[in-house]
Image 1: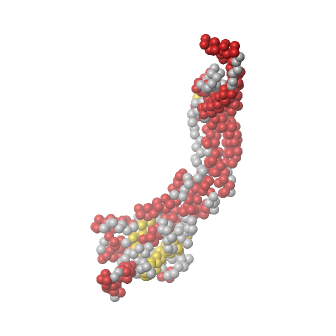
Image 2: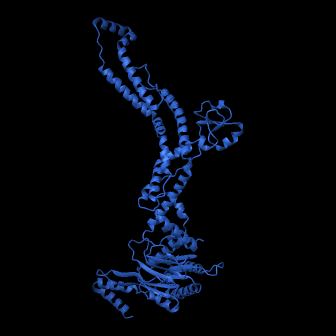
Image 3: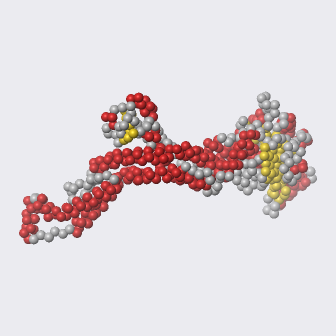
Length: 581
C-alpha cells in the first residue's frame, strides 16, 4: 500500500527523486526508481532494504564511466527490399506473416534481386525463421553498438558476474572486413576522385619530362601535317608516351580493383590528359559492389548469428541489469553516509540526522512517540513517549528545517532507502502531512484554507480502526491572532492525541499550549547568546522538555550594543523590559 502524502510532503519526495535522478547515467534507469514510491507495508520496506543492501555491494566507483558508454541495442523487424524468398505454395502464408521480404512461389520473380532465398532448393537455402531470412537485423545492431558491448564486458568484470558480451565481440570480428568494404562503398566517390587526382599528377609529371627530337625533314613533315590537320600523323610521334599513360591508367585501375575486390574499369582511354571517370561508370561500379556486398553481408551475418544466437537472451538480461546497476549507483551515491532505519512500533526517532539539502548542516537528534532503547542522547530522560510535541524557540533556529528533516527521513524510510542519520527508528505510516508556513498568506481566506487542511489531516478512515499518521505543522498561529490560535491549536492537538496520531507543531505559543495540553511535550531550540561579532549563536539541537528561549531579546541586545546615541538608549530600554519579566 502506498504511503499517502499531502502536497508539501510530496514536494519533498519529488526533491529526493530529482536528487537521485540527477545521478543516473542512463535515462531509462528512471523507470526502476518509479517502482520505489513510499509504501506503508513493513514487509515491502524490509524487502527493499535487503535488496539495496545486497545491491550496493556490487557498486564500485569505476563503474560509472562504463555505464556512460551504454546505449540501447534495438533489434528491428524491418522489411528488406534487397531479397526475395521463394517458397512452396503451402508456406506462403507463414512466410508473408514474417513481414521480412518479398515472397513468391515462382522462381522467375527472382530476377533483379541481389539475394534469392528459398525453402525449395532455388537460391540460398533457408528455414522460415527471421534469423535465417534476415540475420543482418540481429548482427548489424550489435556491430553498431560495439562500444556498448565493450562496456558490458568491463562491467561484468568489475561486478564479478561475467558477461556474454566478450564472446559476442569475438564473433563480430568476422564482420570486420565486410564492414570495411561497406565503409569503402559509402566513400566511393571520394576514393575515385582521389585516385583520379593522383593519376593526373603522375601523367602531368610524365609529360613535363617528355621531349621530342626531330630531324630537319621530320620537322618539315610535322609542320606540313599540322597545317593540313593530319592529327594521326602528328600523334604518331607521341605513341611511346601514350603507352606510358595507358600503363599508368591500368596501374591505377588495378589498385582500385584490389581495394574493391572486383574488376574496375573507370577511366577513359580516349583522352590522354586529363583522364577522368564518368559518373555513369562510377554508378555502374557502385551497383556491382552493392550487389556483391549484400550477398557477402548476408552470408557473413548468418555465420556470425549462428555462433551467438544462444547468447542473445543473456545479453538482454545484462542490458536490464545495467539499468539496475545504474539505479543502484545513483541511490548509493545520493545516500552516501546514510543508514537503513530500524522498523519499530510506537513512533520515530533518529540520532545525528542531517538535512539533505542544507550544506554542512548541524547534526540533530529527535524523537516523537515511544523512545527506542538505543536513543541515548543528551536529555533523553525528558522524553516520556509523547506522541504530540510542540517545538518552540529561536527565529531562524532550524525549527522548519527540523520538520523538513523529519519528512525526508520518513519519505526515504518508506521508500526502503537509507536515511540521513547515524541511527534511525521508523514506524511504517499510512499517511504523512507536512503543513509548511505560507509566509505570504494572511487574512480570513488563508486562515479558513489552513484550518480545513488541518481538519482533513485529522479525519479517520472508516475502513481502519487505527491509522498510523504523522502530522507536521509549521507556525499555524502566523495566520490568525494569538488568543484564537491557542484555542484552535489546542483543540486540534487534543483530537490528534485522542486518535493516536503523531504531531510535531512549530509554535511560539509553547507556554500557553503547555498549560492547555498536559499530554504534549514542549521542546525548545535556543539561541545561546551573541558571538564577538554580535551575531546570534543558535544550537539547532532541540532541548527536550524545555521551552525555547525567544530570539527577539537577543536581537534587541545585539542592536543595543551596536547602536550609538539616542537609538542605543531606546534599544536599552526595550532590552530592560525583557529582563524585568
